[in-house]
Image (cartoon, rainbow, N blue to C red; front, side, top):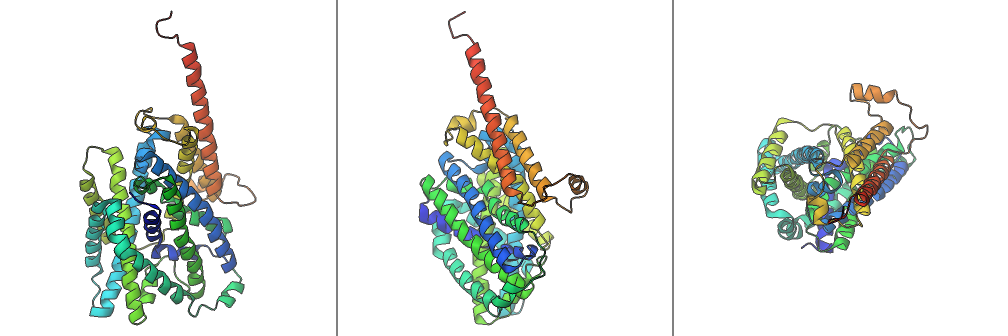
Amino acid sequence: MLGLLDTTLLWTNLGISLLVLVLPAYFNLPLGDALAATLVGAVIGNAMLAVAALIGADARVPTMVLQRAPLGRRGSYLATALNILQCLGWAIFELIVIATAAGLLCDKLLGFKAIWLWKLAFGGLAAVLALLGPIGFVRRFVRKFAIWAVVASVIYLAWWIVHGAHLGRIWAEGGHKGSFWLAVDTVVAVTVSWAPLVADYTRFSRNRRSAFFGVGIGYLLPTLFQFGFGSILVLSRGVDPNRPELILVAIAGGGAAAALALLALTVDETDEAFANVYSGAVSTQNLFPGVSQRALIVAASVLATGGALAIDMRSYQRFLLLLGAVFVPLLGVLVADWLLAGMHYTRSHIFEGPSVRPGPILAWVAGFLVYEWLYQPADLGFWSRWLSHLPTPAYRFGASVPSFAVALLLTAGAVTLGSARAAARARREPLPGRR
């Protein structure tokens, strides 16, 4: 079982990613506003993630199996399919980053990159780590290697980002026209993108307290670091958010310390590829429970490696916000149903419920629509054009919290109404043995 320390170490490791460092470039906010948005988004997002972790530790099943309770067995299949897609998407991005870092390090030391070879190598390593399972991964990899890579990379990155940044100048710099609440939603979306995975790991937690505080604190710290120092990075060095791999090129421009930092970052990124491969396989088992988990892990790693070989790094804020639109309200549905179940899911809630529960599913859809309505995406064709014709509030207050609240309240109403109808039917039915 994973105690508080193991859970905290795991989620601190999972929270560090070079991909996230460039996201503040999309904020287009002054440094003070960017830091405030980071704090607000981190508190909101990590509170949501910690509650999801607690529910997972309580139920002792993977996240997508857990979704059978609020959505029904067949109702959970849509959430499962979407989660598999996001796991593969993130695994592909991570393998690209890891291979790019390894290629730059190899070029620095030996004079050749061979990034395609590193993609193959780290795709295989992700499969090996996933086959260890969460407990073996934490005990054999995180404690012995990854945590030290995290410490080394964080120290070096903090120095490298602040060095020559002229903090006073960028603090007073004007001309930024970004949205504070869009920045908050981005931070929340990155954090809540882990909610469909979190129970895959906290089902192994020693108790609910270890899961709640281990995940909440473990992921909060890297969130604050990455978005906080990332804001300084993009404002001081003009990082292109569409080419985040250029951060690795910039880091590689140093001496021996830069080489060590690249090595640490390469090791550090590997755990996220592991998590997405493992959770992609575990989620697939909700659709095909008869298939071996080991076979699914190998298949997920092969697909992720093939995707990493086929595509280049690209802008992904829309990808993150689309995930937020899907998984923020889904979390609201889960929390509402869990609360009304007495804050405890039994085996019957998960495995003996109805095939489909229309009320929570409609609440999920409503939450998604609220998110998209308030966010107003600009690059999705007819969907964007249709949303642009809808009136929106004059004051922008973000999409994450309203979407979560709508899904939670509608689910609570649907579940309460359903329970009242079931009780009324039970009163009308004659007792056994009576006419």
